[in-house]
Length: 167
Image (cartoon, rainbow, N blue to C red; front, side, top):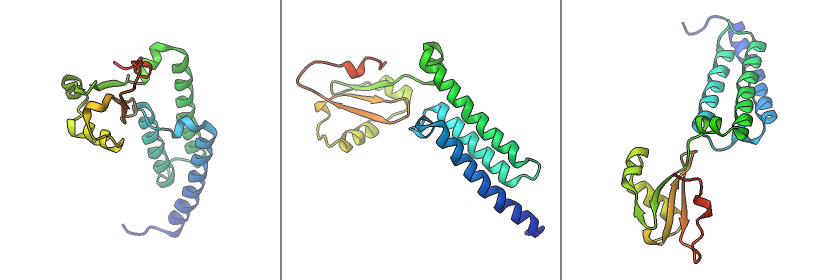
């Protein structure tokens, strides 16, 4: 129950190190997009990579090179999907959510906040983190596709170009 044999421990040590090096190699090869702030799609791929790594290290039924191929497959699929999502708007809508406006011109948009499950307190915290004392000084707070809150201060001109893709 606690110890089977030395070979099992040696296998975990060797395969663990090799798999770790291999996943770093694949992630570096795939580019910065794989390691950027996560959308839901990126989160799923990351969890799948972690699960694959654990399986490769701990399961004697999975050969090392099968695990390496699985890493490559997951990262390759993510690369292909993000590449295609840049070119096809309909796929981008499936893969990435749209940013959502939660506060506009100092007014909380309570219905959108309810749908997105964001509280006034969380929005106020984001505003404070930006160094702003009064909610009325804020043009907008946006829930971004990666789950972060963007705070946009009011400006002297009425341009709202950064909000053009926000619903």
